[in-house]
Length: 406
Figure 1 (cartoon, rainbow, N blue to C red):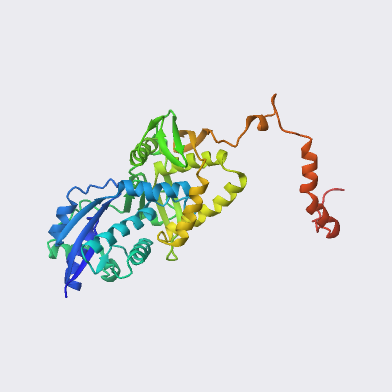
Figure 2 (cartoon, helix red, strand yellow):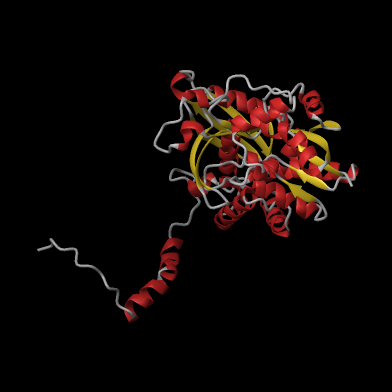
């Protein structure tokens, strides 16, 4: 019986030769699915290339709006940044692509889903877990995990099967991009001692060559969701695109991360994420004046858990839904405007305001109008210090000899 396979198709070398490989290895009919999440790679003829490579059907899904609404912005509200540096662009895109693949497989009555991931990266986990969680009946096929071909062998294979390729001048880097960010790895970036060369970057200007005048901008939020840029209301996709251009022009958004992969490897990863860096900084600043100390403290823990969950491919789990429910609750009053300064690669918060601000001038000021009851502090300090005084009296502290005191 002929197997029908839905293939996540990017148009690159690996997924292009996967089409004839699947036909030969599994006697499969291949349906190629390309999901557009806002990457800037030219994919104008990706449909025709998939058919020319042997797919029985090829389709492109515009997932930008769904990506921003259901994946990017919830992660922004959570403050999810893996290991404090990576805004999770690729990691957030994979569960959405997995869902589209499953939906197509179900419509097409396919028995399997295939992707182009190798056996060394994180994406294989994200795809495999996402697909099998959404539909456990589907078989997973990952050609690049099975065939063990070098790049040169892949090119020879493509030529022998008349697979149309756009090779051009080979880049030393492996890249992936969507609206939320661009990842760059391989080549000389694998040496963590070497500074990433300018040729690796595409979205950001070198800070040394960025404008000499800083750019000030204002971002308005409603319940933790960005709504407007410099007073102009925008949809999520347009706002992110504008920020990528504006911040990238000022050298903002470069990230050089020594990362712990899920599969146990330490990997040097370089990212460009101008909009993500700016929006995370603005959102965190707005939370600082609208959330209480206890909310902020606990939400930091939730943010770490949320980021690891996304990175580890566990989007479609009850744990994620539980964390997401808590995050949404924290965002009820995260409404207001943040002013930022972009200059020579830096993004600095220089102002924040909110109708729900917990910052009260008459409590914080040392000038006239101070309403804080200074006399109450004596009793507060006495009660606050009671446990420490009690322990020190009953259990003397072992203090080091500082020496040099005569």
